[in-house]
Image (cartoon, rainbow, N blue to C red; front, side, top):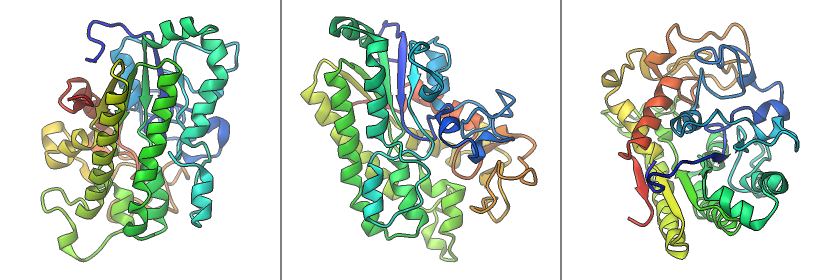
Length: 346
C-alpha cells in the first residue's frame, strides 16, 4: 500500500459496518442471521459474524500487510487487547441513533454508530499504549481503516421508501461525522487512513427488489442496475473525496487514501464473465426467492430452507446486501493495485 512506501505496518484499526465487521455482531445480537449457516461456509467453514460466505475486504487488506486477521473488539477484554482491533458493527451508521429516531426512522439494526466505535477505541487506548510518545510510535505504524461507513445511514431510510430528496440532505451530515472521527483520530496520533467510498447500491439485489419497476429507463442497459441509486452513491463518494482533500490539506503529515469501492465493484457488473461470474451478476447466491433471489422476510441464514447456490464464487452477490468472498477479493485486489486508490492530496 503506497503512502507508507517501504513501511511495514504492525497494526490495523477498523471502524465501519457489515462490510468490515468480523464478529462484533455476535456479542450484540447472537440471533442475527449472519451468525447461522451458510454464512462462512467457503473459508472459515462456519459462521463468524461476517456477512459473507468467507472473507471480506478488510480481511484481504490485513492479509496483504502480512498481519493476522483482526478480531472483533467485543470479543476481547482489556487483558487480551491485541495489536489490531476491529470496532466495525453490522448495521452501524455514521450518524447517531438519535438522528434517525427524530426522523421516525426506526428500523436500525444497532446503535453502534461511528461515535460509539470511537469511544470504544478511546477506552482501550491505555491498553494499547500508556504514554503519548508510545502511542505516537505505535500509530505511525498503524493503518486506520474508516469504513465503509455511511451506507446504512441511507439504507435504513431507503428501505422505508423515504424520498431521495430527504435522504440527500443526510449526505453532508454523514460526511461531517466521518471527517470529525478522522480528525479526532489524527489528534490521538493516527497518521495513515484508508477511507472507502460507498458501493453501487443500484446493483444490489435488495435495492433492485425494493425498487423494482416496469420502467426500463430506470435501469442501466449495460448492467441492469438502477441508475438513480448509483448516482446517489456517486454523489456521496464525490462529497467524501472533497472532504478528504480538505482534511489532507489541514494535516499535511498524514496520508489519507480514498479507496474507490464503487468503481472497483462496477467492473464486476460491467464485465461479469471476464471475472468468472457466470452464476448471475445481480441475483443473490443465498436468498428467499424472487426475481433477484432476495426477500426481506426470508433472508439468508434465517431458515434451513433458504439454501445457498452451489458455487458462490460464480456470483457477485452473496445475500442480496453483501457480496461474495470472490467479489470482495477482486475489489481488494483492485484497491491494492492502486487502480482504485486516490490520495487526497492528488
